[in-house]
Image 1 (tube, rainbow, N blue to C red):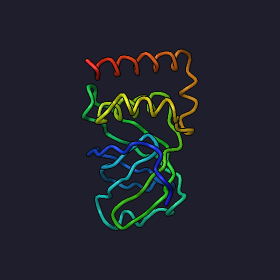
Image 2: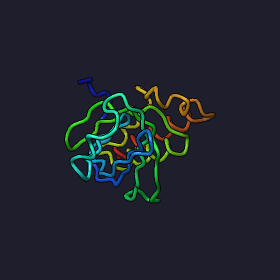
Image 3: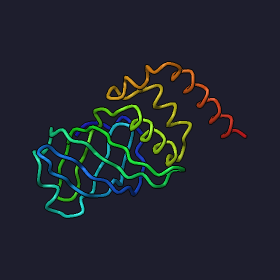
Image 4: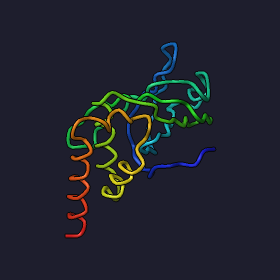
Length: 153
């Protein structure tokens, strides 16, 4: 088992895991970070299908507990399969889906300022293209400063 690099956030998000060959697994994301997630399968046998660890897939999350409900589709690799859970490592996303994921994580984090700093200091290489958007680093620094000011006020 690999060491986790990012802060884990407990959640309850409806999701569908799209596997190769049009296979799907419905479930709940109950544990997520900037690096990956655990999907709890709705049916026990569902987690046993697919190609197992190393499969590439897409996690589609139905995010409802943010100011604007949305869906995020994140490319993943299966890293662990148990009878009831699938462990996923994020491997990439389109810019819009990345932004939905980032906002969801910050909205649900116990300490958003620390999580934002973690995202900046230890960027996930799967999302490296998003960190090179014009003005993104400047915006991120301003957001971090605002969050720190809010926490000290």
